Each structure stands twice: as C-alpha cells, then as structure tokens.
Image 1: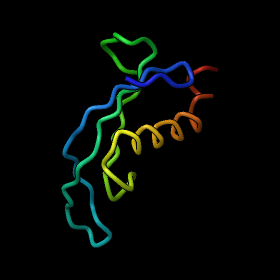
Image 2: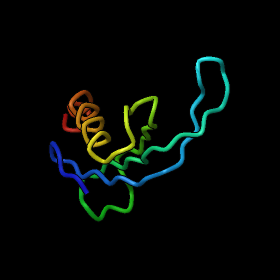
Image 3: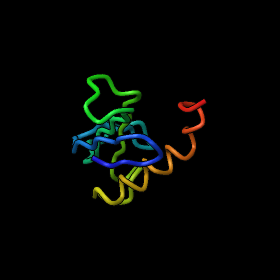
Image 4: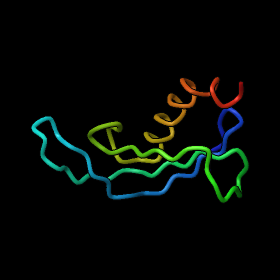
Length: 81
C-alpha cells in the first residue's frame, strides 16, 4: 500500500481491456488502483485502472505509483475541499 497526499493507495495487478486506435479490443497487463481515506476502508473513495501501453509505459509498481501520484495531484483538491 502506498501513502500519498493523505490518501492510501492499494494496487492490484490485473489483466485489463483497452480499445486501440482502430477500435479493436486490446488485452493488457495493468493495475486496479483503489484510493482510500483510511487503510482498512471497505469502500474506496475511487477505483481507477491503468494499463501498460496506454496509461503506463511499463508494467511496474514504480510506474503505476508515479501515475497515481500525478492523478492525485490533479484531483486532490476535490476530495479535501
């Protein structure tokens, strides 16, 4: 679990579906990302996903951690206002 900007982030490796530029289904490695206000919360504030080759350059926890930090930097004001 990652802690960033007063949020707890739970990362789970997943196989995700994306649509390529031609409209074809693309099966990708990636992560399910749960954003929590307390570590053991049964209900996340938000659930998003990030797929390799789309939102992520590589399939690594380091890469997804950077992605989610940028995401939270953009939306943190919404949750704490």
